[in-house]
Length: 314
Ligand SMILES: Nc1ncnc2c1ncn2[C@@H]1O[C@H](COP(=O)(O)OP(=O)(O)OP(=O)(O)O)[C@@H](O)[C@H]1O
Image (cartoon, rainbow, N blue to C red):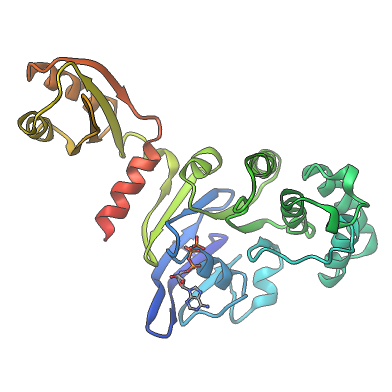
């Protein structure tokens, strides 16, 4: 880790009284990555992002944006950063265009650059036809798109998003995710987004930083977390209902880390490794002389890795 990474979190701790919300957290976010900060409710994600955005202070440790310490040099640190951290309460009597102008002015932008950026952003957030309607009439999803839009007004190189789809209906969620995907395609941007939704991180991100109880569990490429180095969930269906002896035998097979009876004749196996290990498991199960009529590897292996990693960390 170097301070050259656009986002650096170093030995960050935040306590509320005796409660430790962020516990000696250290990790960095690679340039141009889309990193998903994944963790259960209360893991300390929002607290970390608020410290990064200078909305709250660390108890100890430091955070750096573009190499600048956020607490010591907030202006420089946040110069090229856009954030959607606390659900912004916009003035409901303003329109998106007026909102962007207001925020651009606060940021010291010229009228010309605000106007140019505004038109581009309205297109990106698919709000061009709503540009001059008052926010008071908007749905929650539309307001969240405006929130995302305002984070882009100063053409940031880093954006920090705290659960940007939280509280939206499925359509609202899908719209925000589409915008984020488009942003990633077109711009050179470093994005750090917190989420507790595995499928969302799976869908959008190329890096994953998992946190649990204020501590970092893993910070790696998504493909490493879910891929060959990870674990996968295998579901098998047997002709006969498995007894404890059979479950024990399966548990003792190579690379099996856990076995769970899933009701009826179904068994779930957590397997460490990739396709090679999966093939080996299939042949070892065959050798046990139990009659398996279905064998499927779960696609949602981020879930498996996540549950495994969180379990190990407790
Ligand atoms: N101002 C505060 N005073 C006291 N405790 C707080 C405060 N803010 C957060 N906490 C506690 O710190 C812990 C971490 O909270 P945080 O909001 O950072 O978690 P999170 O990972 O973002 O979870 P969520 O998805 O629920 O927002 C929680 O247990 C929370 O109750």
